[in-house]
Image (tube, rainbow over all chains, first blue to last red; front, side, top):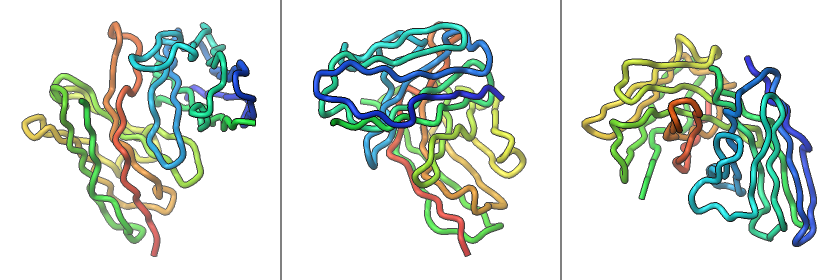
Length: 107
Length: 122
């Protein structure tokens, strides 16, 4: 199985701060990576797919990058509504696997 | 507007069975693969099973293979998950998700239902 190692596990950011979350795959996943935001008590929402493509309706302050085994999600200017849990997903090979998650809080 | 609504969760004893349903609307259900993803309380996300748009192909994680069956009724726009021989470790919120395959290469879940809680306990 492809292991997805996500870091950091938690993060506290100030309003307007730029932050990054990383996901490292145990093997090459050929940019077959998506990022999700999950707010408390809600289902996950798709932010980014194919490593760097912004899902319709997602604010442009979210961006994704990476290739091979290393990927990152950047939020350029933290907003209060960005608080929540963030997960990466690899869709390259079954079983599809998620990163362990990053809890993002507003400082 | 894409809508996915799960039903059928609840409390079940270990070793018993339960069937989840997911009613889909707002898109042409028969054009999309579908999947179930679960999340144990305060834990991360775990892919469970995927079914192709026409039901001809199914995929499962090892821990549910032989116990769970994913199926679909395209005439009713409904996805199912039959869960047999349930274990305490199957306790989780189960999400119905739509599978997108951008350029037939990049696979991900683009829409999720609100989830249904399954608790396996005596």
